[in-house]
Image 1 (cartoon, rainbow, N blue to C red):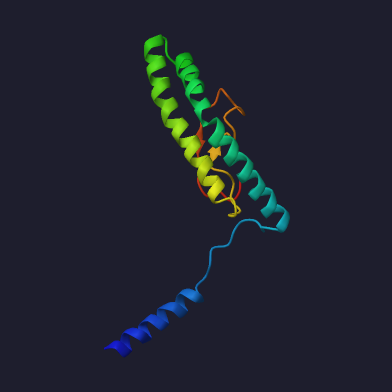
Image 2 (cartoon, rainbow, N blue to C red):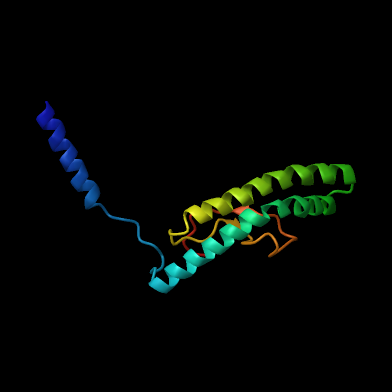
Length: 128
């Protein structure tokens, strides 16, 4: 029985080794790699340090969307906390994974890039 399991394991390992791999839409050259790694390091540090700016940004955004100031401030505060945690956490994740040739997670890249746009988070993007 053990002999059959080891043969099956070997066959499975060979099948996985020679299976078709997904191809990226672009070639990752040394220039592209170092550019993306540097961008992820810089944006990671910036987003960890300035993630708290999502709080006033979202209070302002939600105040503009709602006629009632109390509702706008409350929604902005809740979304601000969510995006503060999101931007700070994703900045830390970008710092830890800077060696992967993907784009940084938050969009816009920095909180101050587009203060009138609500932040979004896209993980593992290879191309834009």
